[in-house]
Amino acid sequence: MNVDVTIEQRTEIRNVIIENKVEPVRPIFSISVGTAVPRAVRLHRLPARVIQIVPQYRDYEYIALADERIIVIDPATYEIVYVLTI
Image (cartoon, one colour):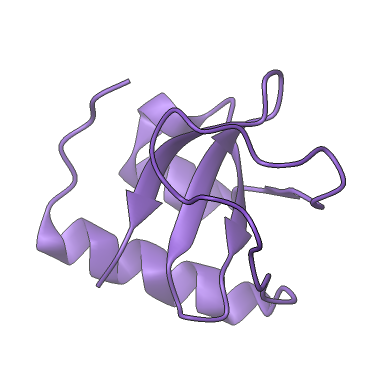
């Protein structure tokens, strides 16, 4: 899925994710769109506020990385659909 997310939207998404205080992941796997993350990685439901910003992400989950990137993942396939960097 190719969704255009503005800088302002990315900043707002990042702030919402930070407020949720999930444990960051230190990946030992490749981070790129289309890559599947290991099933052992715990995914988190995207907050409602993020869905309001980007409705196309309704069915996705995420992980937060220790380097502050936010990775949006399809929970059915564990494939990365978006890498959010600020």
